[in-house]
Structure formats: structure tokens, C-alpha cells
Amino acid sequence: MLDIALLWEARGLILQGLWNTLWICLLGCLVALSLGLVLAALRLANPRLFSYPVACYVEICRGVPLLILLFLLYYGGPSIGLTLSASIAGVVGIGLYGAGYFAEIYRGGFKSIPKGQLEAARMIGISPWHALIRIQIPQMARLIVPPSTNQLIILVKESALISIISVDDLTKNATTIVNQTFQVIEPYLAVALLYWLMIELVARGGYALEKRLANR
Amino acid sequence: MPTADTLSAPTPTRQKAIVEAHGISKQFGELEVLTNIDFSLAPSEVVCVIGPSGSGKSTLLRCLAFLEPYDHGSVYIDGQLLGYEDRSGKRVRTSEKRVDEVRAPVGMVFQHFHLWPHRTALENVTEALRLVNGLSRRDADVDGMAMLEQVGLADRAGHFPESLSGGQKQRVAIARALAMKPRVMFFDEPTSALDPELVGEVLDVMKKLAADGMTMVIVTHEMGFAAKVADRVIFMDQGRVVESGPPSTLFRQPKSERLQQFLNTWRERHID
Image (cartoon, rainbow over all chains, first blue to last red; front, side, top):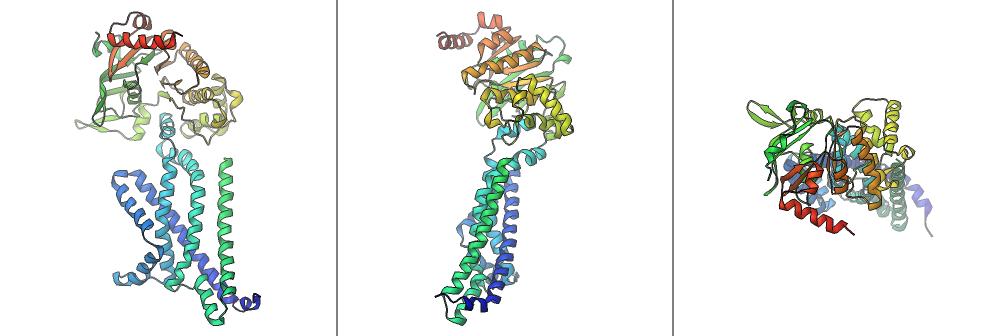
């Protein structure tokens, strides 16, 4: 039998963990989404100058585990004068890591719009800026929503790793409850359910956005 | 064989040419795709450019529109140098904005239409009216509908490109270019991507345009159309203008061996 009362007693820790996971994920994802856009834009705006550095960055993000990145930021940071609280190291880690993936998603979106559509726009006097806003971005938005949703889900799940650099997130607090009560199943099931709820929310949001964009 | 120099001769007053090119060349890497081309287009003139694939005819049109920057020579639209300017004796690229200004009189139609798939037929036509000319939505819609009517597609105004046939897409693309009131229209193989039975409706629209006095440069494989509509036909091969003249002479008495060959191949393919 599951001991629901135990969870009720530990509700303070669970809610604190949920709150920390939520805001760190939210900020981390915002950093990832916007830094990714900047990287993709730099690369598209001046391929000669930025292609190589951005490509390197992307490769590092793809090639290095998030946990190592978090260790470097949190434990390695102070030795280069960068002292971050565990939570902020989590935000920065998730942000930097996710940005590499989003940069690629955006770039793919831009690349899949035929060049001719822009030439057609330029030939009737539509400025490059207007073409970007009215022709490229609306079409790109449609294309990037499904892979972006997917990437956000991955980031939310991987955020469990910040527990290892001592952030009191859902995962770490669940472990704390386990250590205090010697009950393993209930705390982990409870946080699993909460992760699943968060991810379901992201997925639904992405799906709604996808539908909305498809209609226009 | 006529040399490139004789080509600019038919224009009596140079001032009057809408589009004029002197000695333009273009290389893609090692490959020279255009070699020293002269070109001149008088108001209301319809010029068809023919030639085998890879002869440089599309590149010529794209250079005249500065969609491809030409390497040497000069292109003038209405007497204004396109794409470059002299800055203390050195030739430098102009800003995109300046390019827009100079080529404002030019409308272009592409082989693959290049409609914007997230906009309806009408919105494709009105986009620039609103963004560039600053018209209100209502005024732009009135103008846009008039353009769609001109190409016989008023009843398709609310359709997205994906639900239009190739011929209809190309007609919307023509309407989109016409909406900006161009004085010259460039057509880059406008019917080459179409099913044979849809070619006619696009050519009909173009014939009507020509009859209304529109100045046009048409890169095409439609010899029949060129013979009927063109005032002048230019035959290109290997990046050079080999022969040019009125269609009657060019098609009936081709002087160069290369054009004779080209026409024979075409006839063999179309006789049955």
C-alpha cells in the first residue's frame, strides 16, 4: 500500500522542490531560447565571421553532458572568479546547454524557407527586415515549434541533474524525504508524477501553438 | 556573325532605354557564365531570350535584376546604375535600399513562382502594397483584387497557394509583380515548371500584357510564343549572345550554325 500520509507530511519539501525546479527550468529555457536565437541570427547574418564559432559552440553543447557543464560552472567557476549560487549555476547551465540545440533548430527553420521567396520579396521592394518579420519568421515559427517543444521537454527532464550540484529541486528533495523516512517508492513516484505534469503542460502548450500557427 | 556590339545599335536614343547593360560578365567560381554582354531594352519592347540550358540566359536576367551581382560592366535602369556606385574612382556595392530604389521599375516572375505559402493569393498581391507603398488594408485589397481580376483569378483571392494549380500560382505571381506598377517585367522561364496543359493560361496573360504595351524580357523555351509575341529574340549560348533580331528573321534565317542546330533539335522534338 502506498503511504499517502507520508507525502502529506513532506508536502513542504515537495512544494519547495517543485517551485525551484519550475523557476530554474523556466529561466533556463528562456536563456536557451533567446541565446539560441542570437547564435542562429549571428550565423545567418554573417556566415563568414560566425559560422565557425557558432558551429563549435553547438558541437560542444552536443558533445558534453549537461552534468559536466554544471560541475564546471558550479565547482570550476570559482577558480576563474565566477562564483554562482547553485540555482543560478543551474539556470546558466541549462541555458547554455539548451542554446546550442535551439540554435540548430532555428537555423534549420530558416534554411528550409526557399531562397526564391526572399528574392520575390526583394524584387517588389520589401526590405530585408520586413521580409524577415513578415515572410521568414512566420513560416519558420511553424516549422520550429514541434522540435522546440521536444527540446524543452528534454531540458525539463534533464533539469533533475541540478540536484547533484545541491539545488533543492524536486529530485533532491525527493531524495531527502527518502533518507528521512526510508520510504523509497512514494516520494519518487510523487515527483515523477509532478515532472510528468510539467512536461505534459509543455507538450500541450506546444501542440496548441502548433495548431494556432497552422491555421494562419 | 553579328558581334555583341551590334546589339545596342537598334536603340536610336540611348536616353530612352529602360534597361541598358554594357559589357556585363559574371563568373561562378572558375566558370564564366556571362561574357561581355550588351543589352538594351526600349519602352514597350518585348524581348525573348532563348538558348540551351546552361547558356546563361537566366543568369543574364538575374544580373539585370541584380539578384546576381554582375562582376564587370554596368546595368542601367532608367539611366541609373544598378547595384554599384563610384566612390572616389572605386566601384563599390550600393546599399540594399539603393538597389531597391533603382530597380523599382522592374517586376519579376520566377520559374517556381515563389509565392509565400502562409499568405492567401490576395495577401501575396497586397503585401508589398501595404509594406512598401503604405496603403491601408482596404485600399490594398481593392488594388489587389483588381490585379487578380486582370489575371482572371478574382475568385481565388482567399485561397492559399497550396490549393492553386501551377498555372494559377504563376498568374498570382504575375499579379503580385504587376501590383507594384512596374514599367518593365522580367520573366524567368515562367512556364517551365508547369504541366503542358497549364502553359497556355500563363502565356495568355503575358500576351495580354504585351498587347497593352508592357515592356518585357522573357527567358523562355516556348518558341511559338516567342515567334508570335517578341519584337526581338536573343539567342544565347555559352554565356554569349550569338544572334539577335526580329523573330521572323531569327527563326526563318538563322545565320549561326549554333542557332540552326538549336532550332533543328527543337523542331525534331516538337514536330510530332
